[in-house]
Every structure is written in structure tokens, then in C-alpha cells.
Amino acid sequence: MTTVAIVVRQGADEREIDAVTGESLMHALKGARISGIEAVCSGSMVCGTCHAYVTPGPSGELPPIGEGEAEMLDEAVDRRPESRLTCQIDVTPVLAGIIVEIPASQM
Amino acid sequence: MATAPDMTVPRGDHAPVFDFDIYADPRIGEDIQGDYAHVLADVPPVFWTPANGGHWIVTGFEEIVEVVTNPQDFSAREMQIPRVPDPPQFIPLSLDPPDNIPYRRILMPMFSPKAVRAMDDDLRRWANELLDEVTVGKNQCDFVDAVASRFSVTIFMRLMGMPVDRLREFREIADEHFNARTPEDFGRVVPRILGIVDELIALRRTQPGEDIISKLIAADFDETRKLTHEEVQRICFLLFLGGMDTVTNVSGFAFRNLAQDPELQRELAENPARIPQFVDESLRMFGVISTPRLVVREAERFGVTFRPGEMVLCVLALAGRDARRNPDPARFDLDRSDSAHLTFSSGPHLCLGHILARAELRVLTEEWLRRVPRFEIASDQSCRFRLGTVNALLSLPLIWEGGKGA
Ligand code: HEM
Image 1 (spheres, rainbow over the protein chains, first blue to last red):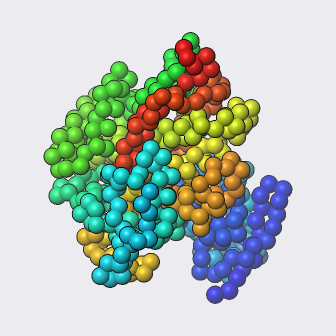
Image 2: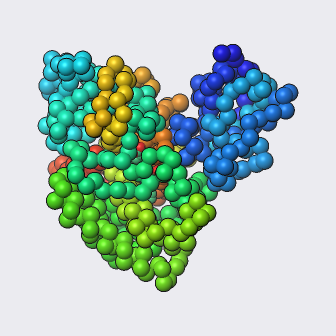
Image 3: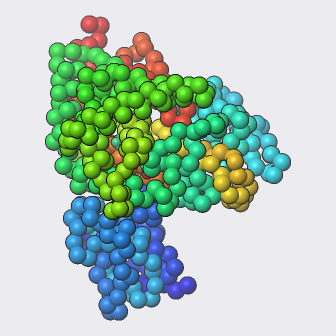
């Protein structure tokens, strides 16, 4: 278990939080009390309320989007190419330095 | 009021036992959620009640999340307490993952944030039509009967492409289902509901429209086949029961609270932009559903042993009042930050209609306060209520300016 630093952007606000490897990115954001990440289904991939724009860090890598995730994202308000369900991203060392932007519609 | 600790005696395996009858506990009055919180204040968040055949009750926020996100141990396939021989099957509610997923995929686009946004103008138009009727030239009404139930039932029926002139009939049948206890009760009411649904399906097969039933008929299951008649029927059955009573009940409790708080009325009438916070805080305080699960695998959790065949009831209304999650939980506070509730449950069966429900509550409150910024409960009457797995306020007599002594 190690921690990975990630950057969170909310509007003009930017801060860094530590995510623990093994947990989901959603849990890390919830744990840091980031508003706009509701995750009302607790990671069961049925609500879409942990949607965020995720840009890779220096590793250039993110886990691929699964089929179920893609379908949920189709229904998201303000979808962008970087849209992800943060519950579907496990925190691993490759995530170091990623930028997570909370969609304006969720704030 | 007789409260907890002395009545809490250990079961054989050290499970806390507290006698609580979810259908008729005499300690629960019309302030249902408040009374629940009070009566169970000193009882552990997971306990066994011998009432209604014996079952578990779970009241803590984290404990409920644990139950509803672990379908391998706690299945949704049976939801009756006490258990009945031939339980009704709802799609997707009675299906555990992964079986529920293809159905959620079909339904999701109809209830997504985008879809609900697109309904906003319609919701407002229907609210306006209804509230004009109830308020123009009038100064009192029964909020539950004249506003809350008619609004949610009307919206729902329009979405389903149901004829609006059958509103009362539909509402009575939904009530009958929620009051059903015995297999005979269910045996009487379920065929009536399915009969109505069948009529609608038959109609939409020949005359498709923009409604949900038409969309279900056209949908592809896993991109391989169409839904069968029975599948469409079971989905509609669930939508029928889940989409009407719930919004009615939450808005009833929310408006009773608002009616008793002139300061809150003033704040919202002056700042309608705060109505979404009012809706969220009302959802936190006034959950209406207790969701059952069937233990399908022995599970050691929270210091107790759940055995296969036992029923577990999650009192969702108490999750929002869990002081470990929301400080000073009995206080209605528009300014709460980081508040949380499980009024829509969580996990794979998270309420499909939660975004629509929020929109309905918001629009109804906005349009009501625009017409009736100040109102109160007609003091000579009490509010009737009903207890069970769906807790309901059955009446809420309201009166407003000019109404007094009239
Ligand atoms: C404030 C109003 C509402 C409340 C409090 C509410 C609450 C709930 C709860 C607690 C569940 C059960 C989850 C579980 O057992 O874990 C549920 C499921 C469901 N609700 Fe709602 N609901 C509301 C409004 C609606 C509306 C308006 C609709 C649709 C028209 C709807 C459709 C459904 C459906 C289809 C399910 C089953 C979802 C599944 O199994 O995947 N609900 N709701």
C-alpha cells in the first residue's frame, strides 16, 4: 500500500490529494470530501454521479474504459473525451500526477 | 415513551434483540422518522426483532451500505417480511447482479440526468395545471390527496402513456398493494395491476408513442433480442409501484415540515434558488422506504451471524439520521455541507428514478411557493399515516392566508 498524489480541479480551485493504491479513485475523492462526487450507488456502476474529467499524469496511462462504463457515460451531462466514472479506476502507481476535473454540472 | 436498553437482550449468538413491529409498533406516531430515531436511539445499528416472524433490522449508514452493496450475501430476490411462498418478482429489483444489468441498461437512458432535464418544462406545466386548480380562489386543501399524490401519479402516468382519467383507480390499486400482508392480499391485488399493465402493453404494440412502454417494447436486450411480454410486464409493475407512492410520501413529509416552519417558508420564497437544498435536506430527513434483503449465504458482519433464509430490513430513513454521518441529525439545516442519506438506497438497485424524483420535488416546491408562500397545518385535524416497508403520510390538511376561520 502506497499513496499516489493526484490533482483535483473544481472550477478555479486546484488542490492535491493523496490516493491510496488499491482503493478506487472515487473512494479517494470521497475520502478527501471533494464536492461534486456523490457516488450514490457506492461504486456499483449504475448512477454516474462519480463522473469526472480525468487526464493522465506523466505515465500517460489510464485504465481502459469498460463497456458498462461507456454506456453510463453516454448518459452523462457534459460528456467530454476525458470523461470517466471514477469508481471504475483503481488507484495504482501509474495514476501519479493525474488531473481530475469535476464537471461544472455536478458542483 | 418506553425506550430501548432494558429491552435489549442477547439472542443465543450474542445478537442484540429488540422487539420492534415495523407494521404497527405503538411507539411510532405521525412523526414516523423522528419516532423511529427516538425509539431506536439506544439500540445497536444491527439487531434482531422477534416480530413478524423474526428478522434483522439495520439502521446505521455504513452498515446499510454494506448490506445493499453485497448481493452475494444479501439478495434482493425476496422482499417480503414475513416471507411469503410465491413472492412477486420485479425487474430489475428482484434480480441480483449480473442479471439486473441488461435491464438497467435499457431503462437508464429514460431516467438519466439528460432525460430528466428534457422533462423539466413538462413537469412545470403539469405542476402549474394542478396547482392552479388547487389554489386559485381557494385557501385550503389536503396536500397529500389534492397535490402530492395527484402530481406524482399524473407525471408517472403520462410517462407511461397511461390514460389520465384512470388516475384514482391506479392510485387505489397502488395503495392496496402497499397494504397487502398475506398471500391472499397479494393474490388479489397483483393480478389487477398486471391486468392494467397488459392493457397498456397491448395498446402500445399497435400504437407506439414516446412513452416508456413503447420504448420497452422497442428495446434490444443485450443487443440480441426483444423483451418478452412478461419482462415488459414485470418492469412496468415495478415502475408502477416504485414511481408513485414514493414521491407522494416524501413530498408529504417535506411539506408537513415546511408548513411548521415559517422561517424556512420565508427563506425559500425569497430565495427559490435554495429549493434544491430544501429537497436534499428533506430527502435526508424524511426517507420513506425500508428495503428488505434475503440472506443467501452465511455472513459474519457487524459482530453477528446472518444465516441463510433470514430476512434483513434496512431502515433507509435512519441512514440520513445517523449521527456518525450527519452531525446533529434531527435538525433540518439548509446549509449542511457534505450531508449524506440513503433514501434512494445504494448499490446495484439504487433508485432508478432518483434524478426524476428530485426534479419532481423541486418543481412542485417552486411552483407551490410561488402561489402559496405562507401556509400552515389546519390545527384541528391530525395527519393519518401508514407504517411498513413504505412509510406513508396519508393526509396533510393545509390552510393558507385568508383561510383561517373562513
Ligand atoms: C422520492 C421518491 C423516491 C424514493 C424515496 C425512492 C426510493 C427507492 C428505493 C429505496 C429503492 C430500492 C433500492 C433497494 O432496494 O436497494 C428504489 C428502487 C427503484 N425505484 Fe425509486 N424512489 C423514488 C422515486 C422513484 C421514481 C420517480 C421512479 C420511476 C419512475 C422510481 C423507480 C425505481 C425503480 C425502477 C427501482 C428499482 C431499481 C433497480 O432495482 O435497479 N423511483 N427506489
